[in-house]
Image (cartoon, rainbow, N blue to C red; front, side, top):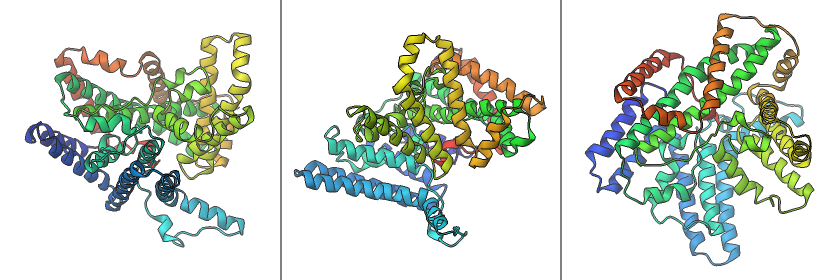
Length: 466
């Protein structure tokens, strides 16, 4: 059930009517039960067995956290945390990386993994398992560290894990941010509704008008890069950079807007990442909830920058390698993580010192950083290293073929870059809410028509696969 599908509209309208109209505001527990059952129905619409895995992770970490709070010995607390880590990461590893590592092990002995030979490893990957696994792990780790009290309400905790607007692709929410909201009476004002609708409209526009249209051109070029000119390939690389940004930030806009309709505030996940002035600045702006998760629970746990210079650089590289692997079981994702790790290490070693000495202009730092990020996206997008090499090789050629699809992509890319550059997080949404209500209504009607017309060609969100 996609946010940008026609079937999602009656689903969310029905839940909103039941939540705000049928169930009185004084019955907060009944409203939370409705949201919980709706979230499970939403998640299980892809595959019923997904709900079983979600419930297992929820019950496990709820129980572990309660025991952590009651356990006094360091050994018992360490064992409890290991149980949570082993179970959650074990499930994630089995479903997401089992076939990848089994195939790699067989190749060592000169064999290949044949389809159907290991049926358990070919089960459908549970959508969003990486997101909710990180969410529950952050909770148990925080309870273990003493920075978060264990929740004594299974209903609140289950809703924290499964809240459907952000369940499938984030933002990754911390318990400290969401559990207190679930424990209070949540009131939704007219201003909240107006802001939420504008945010949802912004997300739909990003996804349907920009991301999916740019994606059609990107797919055509990456399918056979050697059959296209160098200019076409450059355009496709730029187009993919904005496709993945508009696709993912569009989802997050819709998640934030939907959350607000239920009185829930979700964190921002993007802040104009292509205006970054360095690789480190990029990761402060791109997928911010994942970046801070990797920093707080992996980089800091490895020692962060409290160790020697060499160890700090190794910690950065390990963090980014695992961050790349988090995206999927493919060599391209691992190399993408290694590439960003190398950029961060290089910046720490020579970059900042060099910028101070040479006084590199702001516009040039942004331009260089953007192109470094785009080169990394090639590894992320190409399904094989051979294809990535073909894309990079073709970029050295001159020429451009102005086909209708290429011209359409170029125009959309220029508009997308303008929107990205001129609007901060939510600023365009704020301006939209200042329009007369009649104009807002007309804009939403036009957008609804566009979604309806585009729905047969609208694809899944890119980050659903992670």
